[in-house]
Amino acid sequence: MADDTTQQSSTEETETDETVAPEVSGASTPEDIEAYWRNRISGSDKAHAAAEKVLRDQLAAAQGKTAQAAPTSDDATAYKELATRLQTELETEKAARVTDTRSLKYPAAAQALGDPVLIAQMDEARLASLNESLRQDARRPVDPNNPGRVVKGPKALAEMSIEELKAHLRTLPVPTRD
Image 1 (cartoon, rainbow, N blue to C red):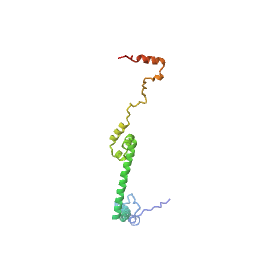
Image 2 (cartoon, one colour):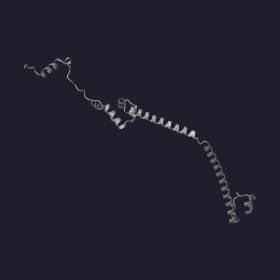
Image 3 (tube, rainbow, N blue to C red):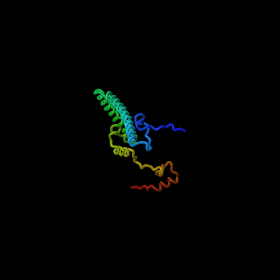
Image 4 (tube, rainbow, N blue to C red):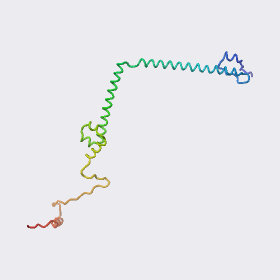
């Protein structure tokens, strides 16, 4: 079997094929190795420079498009007017949301005040205390785990039995003549 690969001399290598690696055996000289790597690095530098040029061209084209699309003075005033209009709409929407939220959170205070502007502008702590004072009843709240006792008053005379009527008459003071 014959070896199909043949060795080229170092002068032929640099002149004909720059991508072929030099032999690492003793036949290569340090100058040949240095020339090979210098050519290889310069090739990668050329590729990098070409890629960088393409990117710079793309950047210049993109900047040219943005420079053409820059708003004129009429467009700038229109954008400013649009921004102020949208900002006022946003503020009114926020105020409406605050009013709705507070009206649902403090229904008694909202009903007593009536004006949505007052509800939106009033301090929330004050609104909560007003709501609580309006909600309180005159009677003590009933605990669902310990219901209140029923207070029994005197029975109506029509509902009393004969014995109960006699007992009731005995408790009454005796009329005196003065």
